[in-house]
Amino acid sequence: METSIQIAADTPEARRYNRVRRWLGVGEFLLGLVLLVILLTTGWNGWLRDLAYRGAFQIYALAVFLYVLLLLFAAKVLSFGLDFYGFRLEHRYRLSNQKLRSWIGDEIKGFFLSVLLAGLLAELVYFIIRQFPEHWWVLAWVGFLAVAVLIAQLAPVVLFPIFYKFEPLANEDLKLRLIRLGERAGARVRGVYKWNLSEKSRKANAALTGLGATRRIILADTLLANYTNDEVEAILAHELGHHVHKHIAKGIAVEAGVTLVGFWAANWALHLAMDRWHLFETLSDFSNLPLLVVIFVVLSFVLMPAVNAFSRHNERQADRYAFENIASIAPFISSMNKLADQNLAERAPSRWVEWWFHSHPAIARRIAAAELWAKANGENQVQGFSPA
Ligand SMILES: [Zn+2]
Image (spheres, rainbow, N blue to C red):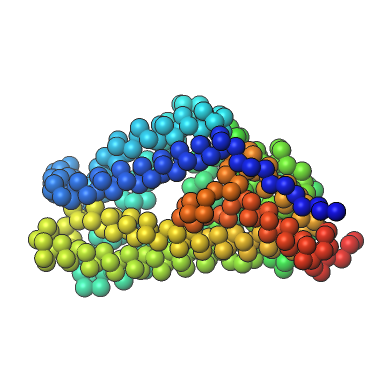
């Protein structure tokens, strides 16, 4: 008898929702790019720099920070319409229950957080440019890496709690299952936290976050409320797979490679703009910041398929780890189907959409891989799994 599980077809609703979301993302990207190009080609970036200098009483470091603030403010004003459309979209598809007031609060918090982080990064880069104009791009890259590691470490304890509440998981059965999974893997995750997502969203999610002492698995309460313990265990096993395969460290390593190319290209572009086009007189003229950002934005867009392919590879590895460490793949498959329904995800997006935009393999593929694995390894029979 064929026991293959049927994969439901994507509803027109899911297709429409994901198409609009994709275009929204592309729109926001293009808007940001257009702003940067306009600033550079009209010379308004210089006008903005003079404004920042006046506002900062001619103090360089303060002017850099003010310049970043002005740039981000202009970007926010431009993209606010699309952001609000995104908020409305989630409601239209019944995926959000966040109140407008709470959303505006998050927008404000997010804006100031981005000003703080981007401001500090710009301070670091322009300080290095001023001190070491010859080799600034290598040193800035080192500084950037240090900040990236610090942010990965602080994110679960400092950044995420700005937007969501977290509390240690109270479900004793699940805690025991995780400890057992961890023991089998010889891996230790310091904590599992309940992520109070339900006050803002109806979607479900789970993630591995943090570095070192802050490493933890977070599970949305929207997931804990609607999934069986077997299903949550399958998801925990997947997250543990990310931990065992060191995916966060590998992700930072890939990011390091991309940013090294980015800083090299930025140095090349800044010199071209300065020496050939005479757009700036010195490297430390921070009105060249839009050009620096353009380089990184274009690079990340060009490399998006490669970075996503790397991410999908990691996801397949984590899935495989889950298959090998849970008693049966049935709860894995049912959790995938539940996630797709709850999040209105496309189970089978078109090839090129998956290739370009998706950090995770399509759900239809993940389910097919699970079935294939179960067939190859015998139904309900797990490698090295001795029934207690
Ligand atoms: Zn994953």
